[in-house]
Image (cartoon, rainbow, N blue to C red; front, side, top):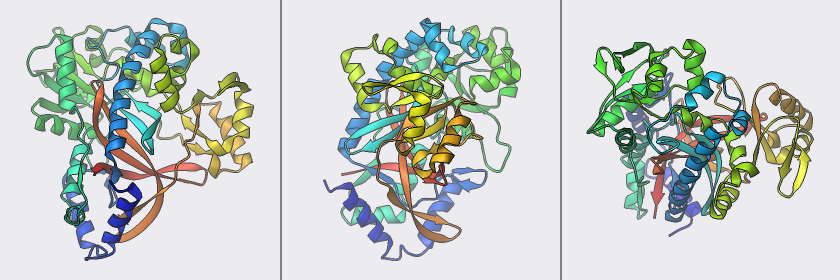
Length: 447
């Protein structure tokens, strides 16, 4: 198996010859993306022209780590639900906490989630979890197929390089059906993908996900939350019953707008609908969950092998506040230590918020970083240790022009009913003290 660097170099050389330096093939690839609605507000989700390549060893690492972390997440979820003092560290709203008392009816913390993974050699580091409403479920497989069918990847294969989709153990339809059967349902469920309707040019990801589920053999439709009704002990939309809700709306957004009176929340509390993912998955939506994974009071409930996995995989993460914490084998004043160690740290919003930026200490002056730390005290932020990573060069095609850009890569690995699913990757740059997403890329296996 050649080194990944050699694989990438051969791909880039191919782009420089045989007509691949011309725009026609790139325009054709991007036109197919538009036809499959892989856009956000009119912009392509993937302006890049090269996949992220992974080796068989890296895939084996991902597969094994996903299964190990799933078991750990299930244990920690059960522990947090039973221990309010630990749960308080996640700063959830009272209404959000009340939903945690409802048994979702299945055994996994997240039936359809994802993990943000940085690959390093044959190992990996966990930097975040999206247990509640992960992105890319709707388009990871389609994007990989488009690249595999593209002119350049076919030529790459004719030149002797084997390239394939990451063979996810499960598909999203398997997770939905498994949740339904564990919930006590029979046969194939009637599925509603609940998401906000898209107000700009394009479509909601929930619409694409409903199409994916339909293509995988389930009766699925897209339903905005305003269309739901809780009637005669069941959840319905347009007069039609709903067995399973695939939820793409956070609990905080629902309870802020409707309190606990929305039909979806009423049906959930009455255990009248199976929800993927349950509101318990909101625990993993906060980056402070990574701190709890290494909390001594949590670690005491895990096996030695599980603690070893967390030590190897989880990036050191702490919620920003004025307190003492442990870093490796020493106790430090968190704020003072954070200010002094900016070169190896990042500040990230504790939960998803498009109006809150991520700060990269290595790209900031000392004064700017100190200002950012003070800002992080006002809104829940975490400080996270960076994993040293060499940037990668990717070809982009935007506004009719080719451009090579140096980027960093985070793999979004799907966690479906406890096993690895498909993968995509986020490409981003660090500049002007912040982190800027540049688009997504498919993840393909080379051998």
